[in-house]
Length: 149
Image (cartoon, rainbow, N blue to C red; front, side):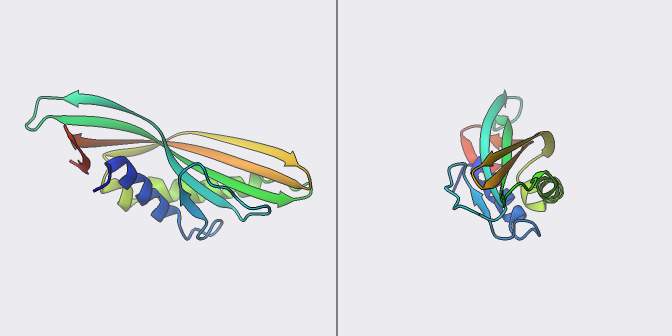
């Protein structure tokens, strides 16, 4: 069985798949080559995780705090401004993940931490990226990172 961190990423990918703006263009992992003139796309990956031990129970548990990132990428022709599209993608992403029964079946809480938008003209295209970081808290039994408790 996979680490709970991977299970959470997989749940997020499932929740983002099929949204109006991005459709099936949702992938786990940050290193994904995208073709020229690619459609709006989500990449979902883990940034970092901290752990606090709790030995008061039996078995001892670990409270984990994961930073989960949804990275939206768009590429538009000419001098188009991708910010409106990125904002529409953010609305769908936030709704999908903050209301996710898949993620909440593994996590204690999920909160929006920050959003960053970057826009860059490149040749005949304008590229836009939105980075949305979520803080996901979950708990595992000590020494058993594949099962959320």
